Image 1 (cartoon, rainbow, N blue to C red):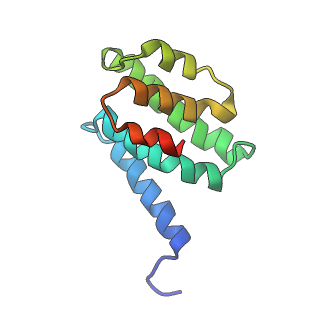
Image 2: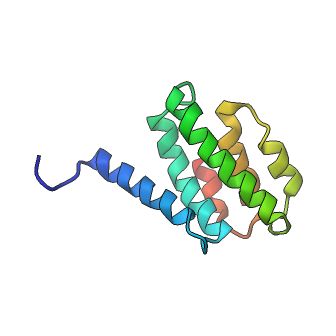
Length: 116
């Protein structure tokens, strides 16, 4: 066993650290977008949208995060209508739709769209 992590554990710890960084009070929306855009492709492979883990943990976390960000800082979103619409997408497509809408409206790194 030892004091090392497997590659799968490393990815999980990396995802957890990215999530934790987005929960910091001073995290900018563009940074949160980049972190979430990095996590979602991995999380979607590990937890397919048909699993309870996705529906009960992954989806509510990301949906709530961006709903609150949208409510608090709506003026920072260049395409608020798209974000609002994306928040109503079907469960299996919602997280990716929200991140795409946010990416189009923020001055973040649009390359994140390639991974979604």
